[in-house]
Length: 308
Image (tube, rainbow, N blue to C red; front, side, top):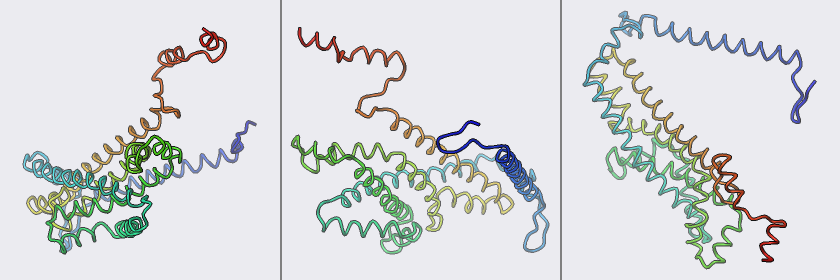
């Protein structure tokens, strides 16, 4: 029987148990799917006792041919992306400032910044939106942008700080040795490397920021969720609430999957684009052979060249 360094190869009983668990899992998943479909296909009973068509009835989906519906959905998507774009830029800037403050050598800068960072990380985003709106009267758009920038900026700042702290101390010492100031060393040597290392985490946090824009529904910002589930439902009627909900779900899912796809590409390129020595990795065997041909022979050829 073959074995692995970490574990022994599964025997007949383990394989049989694994097959049983897999079959049971598949049956449970199929049962859940069947239950959801049957629940959607069942007639709806309102509070007044009126029987309405099921959620899968064609009469609930006939509005999809209306151009005004898609124009309204497009306006909501634009509003969501507008808040996301401003909030993402603000979160990156706030995160950079928090990172600077947290790694500052001056205590009177580091301690207050740490307190603010923990405060913004601990408070819910919705409460931060309401606080900004009620106290500063900024309007629903800027209340959402400021809250998203502060909350996500605090998390991004901690990620950047972790990236800076993970760098070898020789990076900073080398910058200081060649005459750079501590600030120049941070900006030109440490932060570019930390940002590249933490970029997948930062993009993943931006996905969270995109989803949190739906909280602006509460502060009356006409983003995708409010415009669809409030304005369009009031216009078309309660019969189409589930149909409009499916549209919102599909759009949010598509946007989040797109950002996640970008995060995976960035993670793959940042992790595999460079060698440990800082040089660029060869893309294929021919390029690798060319690179090897440029390396001088460390043995007899190198000695001959040196002697000549």
